[in-house]
Length: 115
Length: 116
Image (cartoon, rainbow over all chains, first blue to last red; front, side, top):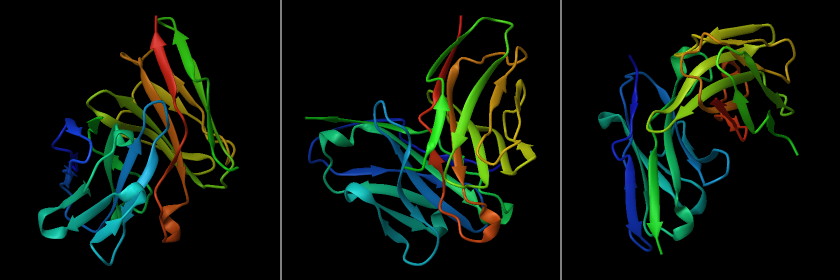
């Protein structure tokens, strides 16, 4: 069965540290890829997305992600985190061949940034 | 402003009762989705609907039911058959991916259901 795996379940960083959150998916076909973020007490919002073209995509708040097709990965990065980045982060995949908008989500990564 | 409204924000249910969670959107989106969020398990798809009067089971549909009588509304009923209903429930909507261009979801703020 298709799955999305986020390797880090809980990450703790100090402010100004660099961040990389891993995401791998198991489906071999063409996919759309997303990262969503859920700040404490807020609803899920889109951080960035990849459909085609340049595999390095930039999102809001200084986040970026790189699609590496050969590794089935879509890792999220930020050069210097801030306390306000404390949140839960979800990777999600949409299979284009499904002809639906269904997203399959990873387990989520909780990021805690210490001031 | 366009968006998705979920109500209530908190819901308490006694064992053996059915409860219905509301989800309304004014984004003119064709597709709507219900997910369940549990700690450490991410979001799991319960049901989805791509068009009015049609819906499909997701990965964990047992013990749940939905209806889609209007484009704007996609209520979820948690029945007494759901063995472990305590969770955070999220509703989302999107344009119809069959139109060829797809941007992902807009989410509601969620309903936290607790069985007492």
